[in-house]
Image (spheres, rainbow, N blue to C red):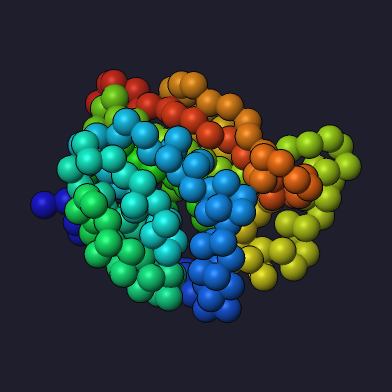
Length: 230
């Protein structure tokens, strides 16, 4: 009912494959659940969700066990093959139904207005086109649908932002699955036409050294109630 959007063939560039990064991320992300406090962040991100949810860039599926029982179904989009295989295994252990499917964030393989909520969790840093991705999120949400986001981006003083930009223009994206450090997710959501709700800046880790990846935003936004014009 919801798959095979007419837009699913729009991405002209090749598939997303980051095999070395995927293996590295799969290892460090599990440790980060307790060491960096990520498990608690996931709980806060997903608390109170209900209905049908689409998760963009599900990675290795670490969010799945944190979805509350009020969620009827999760459709988890993950383009990277190794991470998708790990997400499939995590889906089998989830307490809510999770359907893991391949697809690009810029051309989601789902029908319009099919979901009550969308989850963006450490994904906007690495998509190829942020504005197009958020346009797709708007398309697949019903009017008034909710976006939960936890994203890292630009932050700190002048020296830190200069450092983030410099790293973005050198080897950081190549070595880290296309990740960029100096994007501004909250501004991007606002520019894409979402209505921002409660959100706040958080540091990750909350205690310890401040890194170029530490500056995060956690919050909620909504698609406006009016229907899309077509």
